Length: 137
Image (spheres, rainbow, N blue to C red):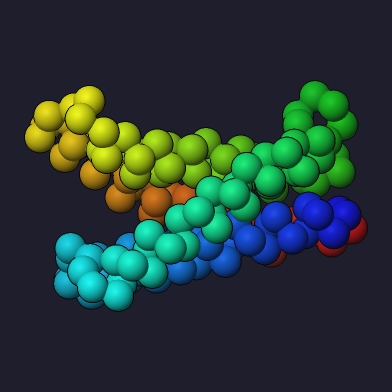
């Protein structure tokens, strides 16, 4: 992996760590909803995660592409987890941004909130599982 790919992965992981700590951590401690500085940290980390995720999608897509010999370079488990990270990351981003628009009513916003929560949990688990599987290059 080149330094751009490493940096993008580190940015994504750093953003995801803050997002998980503020989102999942608050929920797990029974203090939901987020307020004050916790909410501010969550919102501030979101662009770091989103930009890191986009950069990971661009820089890691070659080794993570199945059918191109990429699975052999990265390993099949790491490849699957990378795609879970990318898909769940997109779902988390969209389910966090769409409720800021007047497109959906209360029921739709509740559905997006739950989608955001559970996709975030799956995303955090996928990143934790992917960390030891990625190969240093």
